[in-house]
Image 1 (tube, rainbow, N blue to C red):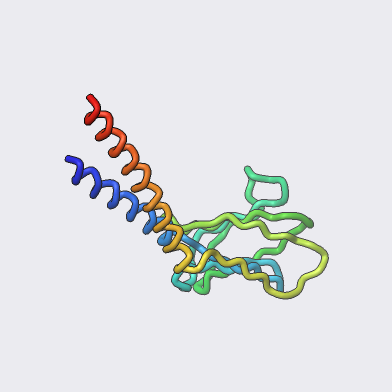
Image 2: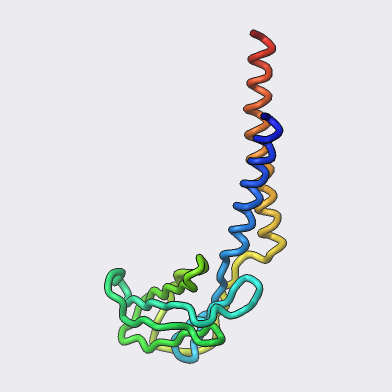
Length: 149
């Protein structure tokens, strides 16, 4: 029973870590106009994904809806200054919410990347070690309690 529980915990931890890696979406904010380029963790574009654009301070009514193009890019033409919210979803569990700052000047490209895969693997292993440490302490304490009884 104890061995089956150990393998169940290990499997759950591995699946959780894998799901964290599989659903990551990175983006770049394009400043030669206003837009966002979305791509999966492996670098492939988030092509033909649903996009919603919200004005600054607005979270209920979309300013614009549409889809990314084959390169994972969605451009929009804001009508006010401020922090615009861009929500993207591919309908398969991959998505992201991005804030695009609209100011008076337009120039350059800002890349906002997530953690590199090696760092994600290290973080995932840290989670697994944490779960097993807690599990080990609980099992050890129960064994000591049964030994003293």
